[in-house]
Amino acid sequence: MKYETPAPDRQIAMVLDLNKCLGCHTCTVACKKMWNTDAGTDYAYWNNVETMPGKGFPANVHDPATAGRDLDGTTKRGQIPDLDTGYGRAWTFNHKDVLASTGAPVKEWLRPREEVKWGPNFDEDHGAGEYPRENHYFYLPRLCNHCTHPACRDACPRGAIHKRQQDGIVLVDQDTCHGYRFCVEACPYKKVYYDHVRQVSSKCIFCLPRIEEGVAPACARQCPGRLRFVGYRDDPEGPIHKLVDRWKVAIPLHPEYGLGPNVFYVPPMSPPRLDADGRPTEEPRIPLAFLESLFGKAVGPALEVLLAERAKTRNGGSSELMDLLIAYDWNQNFKLDAHQREVLS
Ligand code: SF4
Image 1 (cartoon, rainbow, N blue to C red):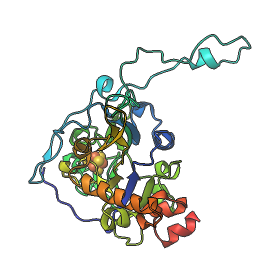
Image 2: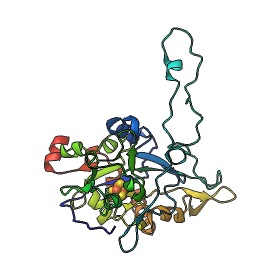
Image 3: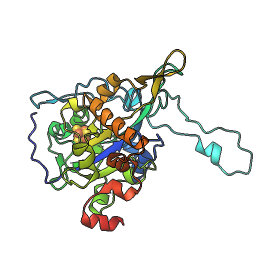
Image 4: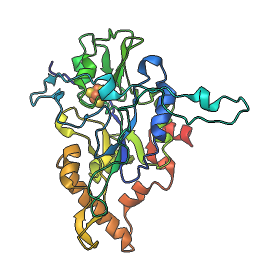
């Protein structure tokens, strides 16, 4: 299907600074506990954190996609990840054996009951590169991109997915959804999940009840690294406009899919590789080609700006960009609107 995209009045968006992600998964837990504890979506993570380089979640999600859009805007069909080898089933644990308060000494370790072969974060902190000269990894938190041209919406024959006019949030109407899963196929980011108990699709709602009250999404508000910024694309005083449009250091994941993501990333700077004698070289540990495979060609110029601004502060100067990214005051990460700012303070 070809897309028709009535532009929303405003577009809410998020920027994630990958230089500050701790890989603590607080965002994932905040999201999962708030929205996603149903039995039918026990395997699903509206928000997840991946170690890169790595397989991602679901497995191999960053391999060249069959989904997304053709150059003429036509939605391409993709695949539905396998529950065992793609997502990984939710494990069950021997909590009762370990934690039951019987008074007797505990003799059991906490462990999954099943044989475990794959799941989210299965390759956590593995990374790539030979130790100690070039080993590297970084964390990549992911959520629905609330795309400008959502493939999930256009793949749905029921018209059950829409993009909200007031803020561009992409939602599934579960009363209309018949569980065909075309949206799961079509989203190349694999951020629509099938609830196999209720037999409907389910996805990130950008914490819209919080947004409407002027409160940032749970993943952003709970982040101890203060790496998430939330606001509207068209607010010239907001962090999104500054980082995406003015400084051009925040760029989308997989722009080649053609969906116009509204989640942006400040790419990771990396320490230098070492030469054979263990001395630092001019080469960054994270290869530019790998970053380009995730973020496209805009990643090089973005890194150049970041490095130049960081050098300014290292030389005793000041940098508006570095001050913004450091986020001295967490309130500054979330610029919603005047009313919402009052609610926040
Ligand atoms: Fe739809 Fe996927 Fe885009 Fe989210 S990321 S709006 S689920 S196509």
